[in-house]
Image (cartoon, rainbow, N blue to C red):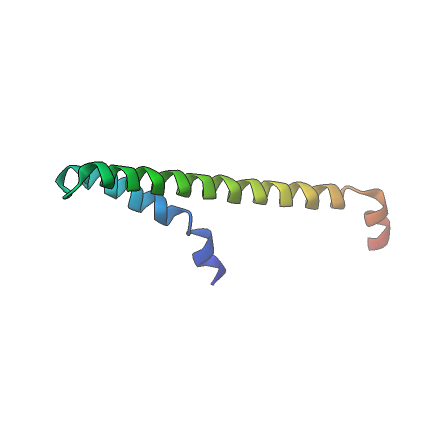
Length: 75
């Protein structure tokens, strides 16, 4: 299951890009473009939040490992 969750930001990005490229053939092109841009924006926002969370988690782990009291507990 976790492997699929990592790809979840890509779904709205891909759907949004496909929607934007096919918008000229839609029944209502302006609405298709709106939904395409919304999907791209939300997918990008979710991707940035995910990358930020991973960066914060990595920073916390690195700080914990470099803490002298943590190193003393390992000995």
